[in-house]
Image (cartoon, rainbow, N blue to C red; front, side, top):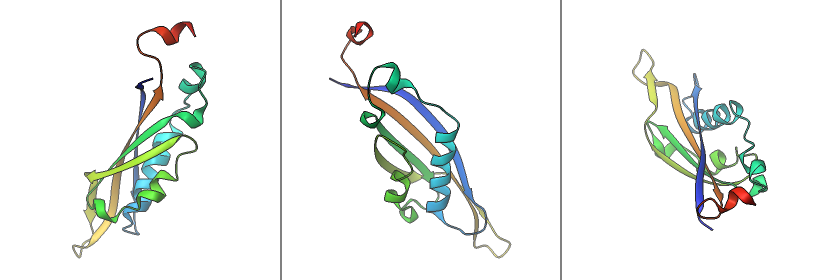
Length: 121
């Protein structure tokens, strides 16, 4: 059965004082998760644990994000994490990194039959 894209959740997270890219990224994922109540797996008779969730994070310093910590934010499903340049850094008066803003997009997939066969099941 092919994977079908079902839902996209969006979130934003910050680390205001700590200059921690992972903290901002995990907060962005938390924000995306808490703004939605996904019942899509239930609606198709699938266990939530079978969902595939692709997590996309945008921050100014992608290499500074702990991908395992970001993936651990998922309450269920199997996740993959991609971190790209994005988000925003707001510098302090001395020019060093101050506030970090991360953006997250979580794309949820289910393994469903092709066509409309799944509607009748």
